[in-house]
Image (cartoon, rainbow, N blue to C red; front, side, top):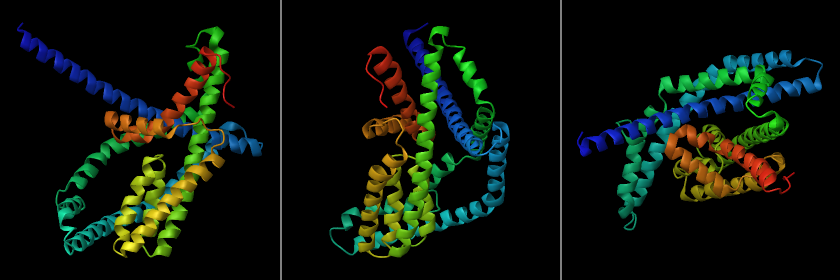
Length: 338
């Protein structure tokens, strides 16, 4: 076989294996997201058990039934309103970019940036711009439906009988190390549950604060922008920055000074969320250095796309707990952090 053909075949095999690896990582991340959902259901069920004489299985059924009723009762109405709000938001963003372009064209220094703003305007247009293509690819019905189904079913099964999966995992550990493995699993569960609860509380507070602040400043669509900011808050560090962009663009329709107030509000909100809310809520969360989290987010985004940036932070929690327990404490002999 010619050397050139052999090289081509080897490259093709390597690319195929790399593609298969990426798909495998995406599936594993979906399973991990399902485990997080299961931990959330498990903690809610235990909360009922701790305050009532209801057994765990009954509490689990109550939690699942309540979530299903909420999803069925309010999901359709809220979803339709949210779709309408997002559509209106896209229109407002397009108008805001057009207004920014007109403002720049009136000044000599701003004309040099008019091409950039024109490109931004085309992203929000309906005529085959970059953003609609990205949204179409990312919002594939098949992918989203499959991902939601995997997360829900994995979460339901994990929360229904968590001891089954924990005991199955422990059987893979040598008997002398099983007690230590059980302690590590408990630490992982506590850290992940703390992270989930902290994210949910932060998302709720950000939604309320953003909606009120934008309404006071007279920015259009304050509720929609507040919900978008809350959803992006699930992504630490990067999410708040992304949330400020549509707020600033739409605030430009009000006045340039409103843009400044919106940016100042987002800076203040991020400071409060990082230095007040997070330390109070997540007292038992594994410490995550921001640089490490951002690096993990960028790496996972490049490797596996959107699911990577969503799961990068909880994966960082897992890695930090494992490093602290298995390496720093067990291997090096340093005391474990409280």
